[in-house]
Length: 392
Image: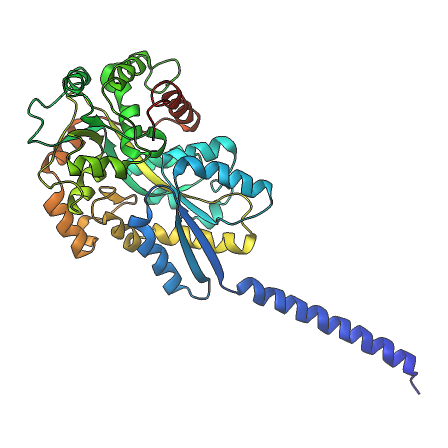
């Protein structure tokens, strides 16, 4: 006859085994539960990509329960993420950013390294990019994936009713500005695509000794900007404020890029008849937006985020980035012609795009922006020596 003690021991052991198996299944079920994702945009990028992100949630409800979208100024984001990480919190899962916060985050060690560390999660991703965007992807140094692309500028945008002697060189721009004080405006480069494209494009136009070294190679650029500073009333904190003043007639001229030329005119913020002018010897400084993941995001979210990032590089989602010309053209991957875009996007580009862009894009050379450390140095020097007393 078996003892009660033996039965009790075996029963207890079986209960432990069942509990262990149950725990494994519970953990597996928990890992498979849909996650909520918080996306922060510091580049105005959601205008191009939010529909794509929402399409991922609709297609994969088993992976994503909710997506929260937030906008924030690029200069403030690195400090916020640094504080969050120091406190051991993970409130932000994905950031869509321009080269500004991308560079600051790389320099401060805020982003997860995606490539080559997680290459298995992104099979063949680098081969998807078109040639221009592929060069821009290198700017991310493996810490992000480029999601949209724009051969940006710098360009001048002006009111043709007020500006008859249109500047074609920096010297002519300075002369015009001095003759029409307070009528030229541009935004702080650290938080403005057109502002930083103008800043990074000037060394090429002015013939500085090293356009890639803002500290030791931009003597002509800094001298020019200091002279221009005398006739610029102030520097807004973002491009939207600039376009509002241009459209309202407070200012007659600003610096711009292809997307910030097309989109505000399509939206009626700037009159459709306003014109653009390139410098005679311009070099295109290209621009891009990137998806980056802050360090500290939990593993169960990382797996979903990797899938989401791959999804955003599929042609169907990329075609949405033509949008209303905001980041013209928009797509970063190969073989996504305008004909794939929504009908509204096609109409906007046909109506508000400029025929001269096609020729300029072919005729003039293209370069990538400054690398992360050089870009941060350029922003800091501009803030300190140019915009310190006039930035709002």
